[in-house]
Length: 256
Image 1 (spheres, one colour):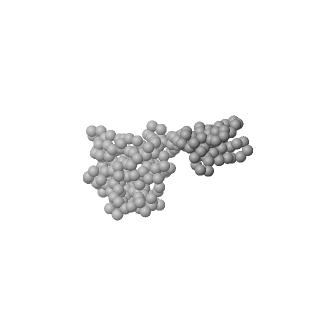
Image 2: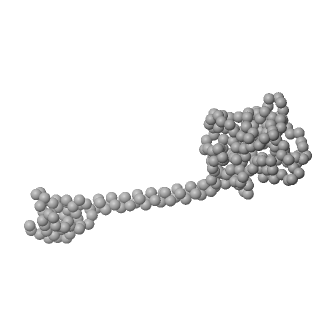
Image 3: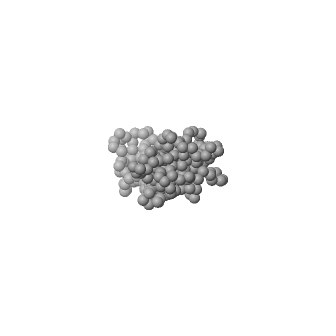
């Protein structure tokens, strides 16, 4: 074969064509026995010419690299935004120190933290606590935020009213509610003969427990473990740390 003079040609990505400055020409002979190496035709089987990539191939590589960079930047931006937004979100546990929900909501005993409100089962009970004759405020909106809704929770401005909102009928107890309370404030809220939430009874004090089931019988003393009290519609549960003893209200709020 006769060598062709001139500068080094540009080969296509597959090596089957070369650019002569005006048009693409075959770089492989019709009988598949010879190939153009940029200076002369050589027998097939020799080393393939190490030519530069075609313009189309270079454009494709650059475009692919740009897409990869864009994806990486987008992912990093999303992660950064999520972290900042998560720190500023109102969802999660409630912090006793700051008065706002803390991050990382989790299941409270057998009560999950859901993202949606359930109304398949929906009723209300009332919890009231008295310490030495004085009513103890229970945090309203307990167990409830934009990012977390426990099946047992309270609403803002509804003192002591426990909302039972569940996707299925099951038994809920006062102990379940105190577990939600503990998960919400980020610290255990015990309920036993010597503890009511953050209150610890002294040696001469006693916990009295009453349950009014709304059946006309009024408030009846509950002798067992108060955590075992089953939450029922229109029920009033009273936890009283005595002395002194008081007569707690027994009228269920209207509208619930």
